[in-house]
Length: 92
Image 1 (spheres, one colour):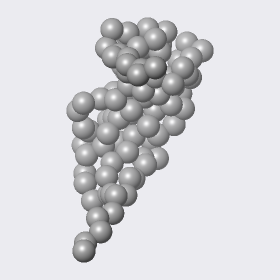
Image 2 (cartoon, rainbow, N blue to C red):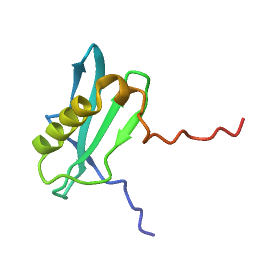
Image 3 (cartoon, rainbow, N blue to C red):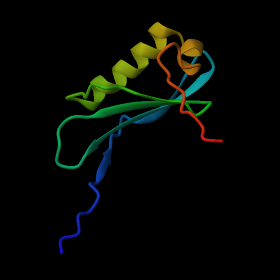
């Protein structure tokens, strides 16, 4: 029997918290060990996670994309999810 292990996740040194217009964003950049493309996830103060569909060839480019998007969308609109957040349905 072969036991498959979960892949190792590599966190980028570009991952960090940033503050824009007084709102804190946790910019998370990571990849699966052995791959070359980076994923981008921005978590807002209220716990909303915004994940980019596209992958980035460079972690610095991913960080720049996060900052530029937060600034262009407006920090408050971005924090509130804008029109792109689909809430999870609760089974309660």
